[in-house]
Image (tube, rainbow, N blue to C red):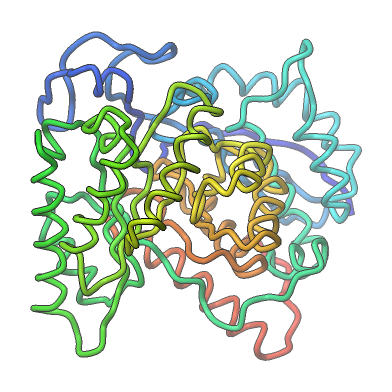
Length: 420
């Protein structure tokens, strides 16, 4: 089987780009937007719409494999690549990469990922968003060519066993939308609400009281309307604001996280990104110290690292330093999906937890492909995507996993077709 041609199209992503540095510097909220100058290279406004580059591979049997090149909401922050602009990459893909794709056997997945996703142009690696979408297309093409699901392809290539049940999902929704949070409780999601606490005064309060109040209110609401026996985990993403509040005083941070855990009780608490340092090494040192302080204090919470943990090398560095209970493996930041797969398996190897994550900026296609990767690699949980609407992402990820498991349970081979 061969790849006959490559076609590209520019489309929308699932959310928007935000200039995290400008928000943290005190940009004035204006509805969904913020007023003020940008602070991160590549942004035209503090909040701006994002777009994706869809890369479609037309196979010689008429099937079409595709992937979506997309980057994260807070592009350009903490060591990430700058904002992805599809129009700046479309001609390069069509003119320079398309001839290489036509030379590939789509069944040779890992060889193809090495050749395409590690391609350099003028001595520079491809943008991580480009690597991400191209690897999705190659993975989809391998599944179509082998007449298997993507989960089966990943399991065969990396020697893993496919999960017997769906991977838990962390549903990401706005902290201000209690009607939406109610729906997630009603649907008995595994973890919630992720939310976003990006500014100390606006989101935490000058003494952290806003975060404590939210954790307590969420715990009460789950107990008020949740089904009998429903025990979700509460996950809060604080984007370094706890560190800012306490001027990176690790003992004070550990104590405060313990107080948040008490407010969230009786539900387990996961705190993501309590600290964002100025460099990777400083981040590793602070998190390793924080974990020791939390253990000494008997704090009943888990810490998840995101920022400065963008690549497989970053994840290994945090793991070797015992600097996280878990990491968010943010797939678009890792570029080619083989890096994401390797990262999940590394976490299993050393006994570190992991969320197979991503961004609200993703698409239905990138989310569905991620669900197959999750089934084949077994992360602790998935982050919902695309968007922040909760329902749609829960449907896309959950239904794709359920369909795949039901099909595999029949022993049938997957018919060739355009769906993953």
